[in-house]
Length: 185
Image 1: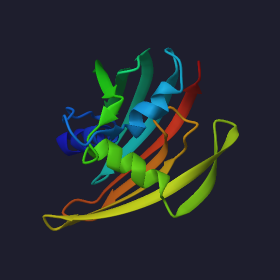
Image 2 (image 1 turned 45 degrees about the vertical axis):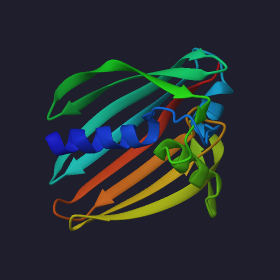
Image 3 (image 1 turned 45 degrees about the horizontal axis):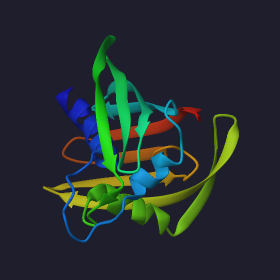
């Protein structure tokens, strides 16, 4: 059960955690640039399902833009997880994304890689079509192979539209995250 929560948290952290700024070598932060196009009150929400050894976890995750300045955007993360019928609310967390960042920041690298993805796919989501950039990653770590396929669209706050992650061993896991709500202000 803790593994499921850890995997869910890992996906969120990889996609949206911020790192401190370094004084030199700053670049425009692609995460900031995407969110800054929208007004406070803009919201996106996702349904996430994870399955580990036959145990299914369902989560609802939402991001709401609360502040936009020339220096940063502030996004509030909230959600809940249901495991074996028990629902747990996630405490609200404020995420800050600076306008400038270090090019080594994982968020910047992921966003830049999404912009240079070699494949594209149109998804039917929320009653409309979204032209997405698709990128895939495979990571070998401590005897495990983790494969991720992500669909991103610049018209979606935060860019995430859909994500699939699988791990075959030591424990077979599968996580699917799909956009369920998009409110643009």
